[in-house]
Image (cartoon, rainbow, N blue to C red):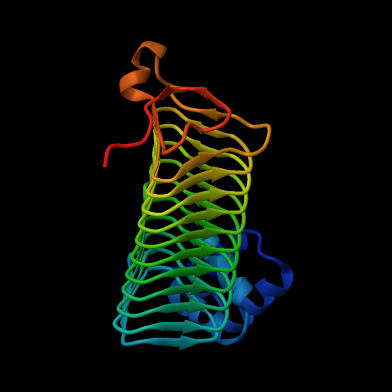
Length: 290
């Protein structure tokens, strides 16, 4: 794909950037070659701008490993080993790696991110498709995924978490801010969120679910140990905890919000060793059978 001088000028670039473009490329050049030269010259912001204006390509580049100051690639990167980048990683389509990925700046992938090892994003993490990690994910900024998330180990995020599809976390989920999952959220260990946790469908944890504000699910909520919130607990269907269900002081516990009262006994059951204080709706079923 060749970008001509007139194509670029039509996007209204900044004066300094366009002058540099003309000096470097004259009447035009190959799209990806331009991105590579911009990054090599330290003009990573200009490369990101160009990618935003002209979008992804179908080019596939296969590499043994990546060690770089920054990466801006319009197509798909397939890396046999790992990826270690000091700054920004921007990929127009997908990034696949046979080992781990570390990005010192924003890690932004237009389509799928599939990593056999761990992901360490020292700024934000944005994925336009599905996110797959064989090991854990550690994100220092906001995490946003427009597809499904599957992580073999822990997910730890210092910023907000927004997931458009289902999320499956092999071990623990720790969020320093709010977490919102449009579909179902499942963790093999504990779920600990400092603010509000919302899921459009169900929430399940092998250990405890503990949130610093409200806990909400469109379907049911199930935990092997504690279900606890500093605010209200709201479930469209049932609540089931192996240890206790505990809302914050002055807040209520609500089950069956999306179920007719006549169906509460079958579809809005509240089960725990002790009846929760402040149980406002749902069918109290007592402890789950051993």
